[in-house]
Image 1 (cartoon, helix red, strand yellow):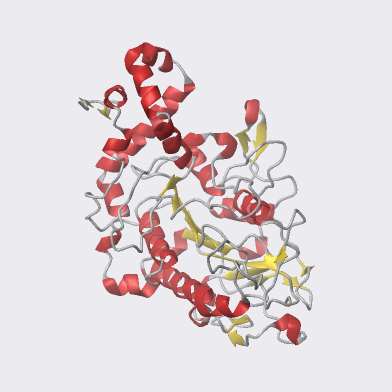
Image 2: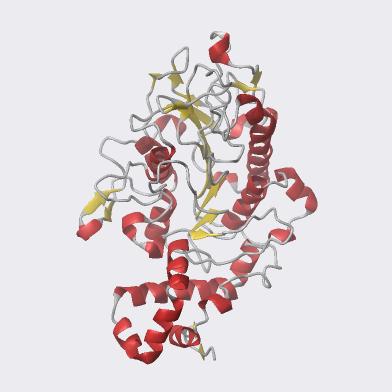
Length: 448
């Protein structure tokens, strides 16, 4: 029997005795039926992670005067921002260039594999010495906490999966602890039967499920008293309390009620997984979530993505232009337009970034390979100005020509835009303080 505590809602001890983590489900499927909300007052953020690494030359840093084997098959188009051109594969995005800026000189010197780029672009640092740094959204949640009953950081639709390096991707709270991990949707919001499953951090919920019978039996048989004194008990209290609040809160029900959006709005974003995740991201920040991370893809294998090596199981440039780019173009432009119409863009930073660029010269398979030497990202919303170009790559797109930008600079820019002190220190492993950003990293001043 599950017992209720009048002071705390559902009692964790009763919950443990019932062995109900999986039977209760920690889901909201029958509750997501309400709509309407007031815009939050803080600056929030949406990070669109373009897993696979978009080719800068085929997207936001075209080289029309380069040789054919470099410039690629696409023409350039003018945008709504004076002096800014992008490639023709983004006709909708071009109309909203006044709402974002392009940083064309991002680079890193670490190994040219996906995982290192994921780490660096989402945390501002490369993991080393066994230290996993926290995702920017997890840091924001740690510093500012929840905004009502919704989690501070939500990750859509699922965590990054296998991308070849077998290393962490930078999407957890790292040394801040699992309590500050993002809450993961673990579902496809474009599916006809979409509902919200577990809203506990994935590592926590999987660990609970894996050991459920053993731990529950031990608790019932007397180990519970000893367990109550451990740090894990407090973590379980915190996670359970949030899970219960999510399940019982009108604010949370409204945040995830994607079925309350008009068909024309859902169509505007595109009925794809990425499109509906972008729409859900708008709903979440509108209702108090401070940071939303959207993974456009979960893996680079056996899926058509930005990873355009050309040969199977990857994608070539033509497939990218036919399938991947239109998906992004529709969803990203709809998000910017929707946020603007609702008065939310002024307090919502929107970034769109990948983990690296692609080699300037097209390979024999009709694709481009990994290239962290230079690439482009999009930043706008909140205090970040639109319609600007920061930095440039050289004539062939190999290295930064001006204003080289590191992942630490990108992180510092987001932190500053969110109102966080970039000089703040976080409690690292063994209590050792770790600065919010690497020494020397600075916000990109041209964007403010």
